[in-house]
Image (cartoon, rainbow over all chains, first blue to last red; front, top):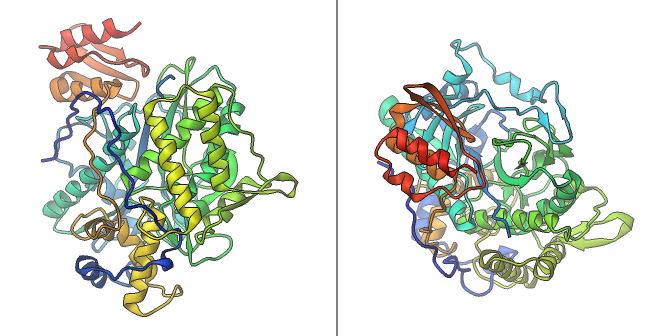
Length: 60
Length: 483
């Protein structure tokens, strides 16, 4: 069961969100790491036709 | 500085095994009803005014997408309330069927970390409900947190900001539009291909192709950069709700916080009459052009034949804020993060970044290498779609976290006691005594009849509500809190 209750705690003094490693591309072709196993496994499971079959009602 | 209350509404994509778009209205109704957490069913729609325009009039009707009509089918006759299946969750969020899309609207949040966490929590609500749906119906429901079906249909991720009524609307509009456009470089979710205008292999924004107007009240068709819906969900004499429909659904929580933080920065500058002045040659075209600039540069054309870049526009807001505002620690951190990201993007340095369009582009490059194809590969849209899938065991987004391409974030922050705190408690403790509710009030069944208690949005609600032994005490504490 999902716990969706609100909990109140003191604010932490510093933001916990950090950037990743220093540096990063705006064009991924600069550094293209070999896809490790978990990503490879999921890439192979993707139905190449999935997007063509995906049709949605227009929303807001 | 006055805290700006904000929230995010996300319409999720819904793909049910064996179903199509023509079934989506009914499927989304069934889907929402599969939520099994603590919830209250009884949303009051009577105070909704989606045709009211901030510019001082009421639209006769809202534009609808003519292409979408092909999916209309005669179905069971249902009242609107029955079809929408509204649920109010015990954290104060709203979960319902909006035009065939399960929609999760976060509770009102005071801080950026809080809204990022509640928005991410919505993904787990949707995933759990999808599991329940499969158990009950025997059919798989795939849920996507994105904004397009790649075939011309878009569905929104809307942001809401509570702002005072007394400041001139044009001042807000002039301050916010440059950021709505420029933030795409740091907050876009990325999309394979285009669905209108100039074709492209990849673009920064999911939503840009669907924005055709500068400002209007419409949301379903001919969508604007600056939405003018006037529906404050509180006292309209005091407050407006800025309803932003131009942004993307972000998977990366840091991008969600950044998206909201940049608009808050613009609003604070508007209120201090200190926002930078930018006049684009054509704002709608600028949005489209920037979105197609995934190779860097992020150039924008200004009036008079001049040019600038999205990063320069954003930098002007950081500098103005530092010069003119008494910045909170949160906004200082936001500016520092955005500057770092902007510097990395403009220097072409390698490495992962917490920006969805960058992460997705790296993913697509890996998929292309694996398939031995190029950017014309029609399968790329499927990999794009699976980035947005809300299933941690299948999603390509979650796989990118696992291999370190997207930084893992610690999402456990304090929750402010906004009016959502009171709403959530009412559902947890006194659901049986509730007659109906909405964003702006709770209506209780009491011995005196139905009693409506307003929930003003600018208050901190007292902790003692948690310990109220009965509904009468709960109501008394709420009323005592109202000035």
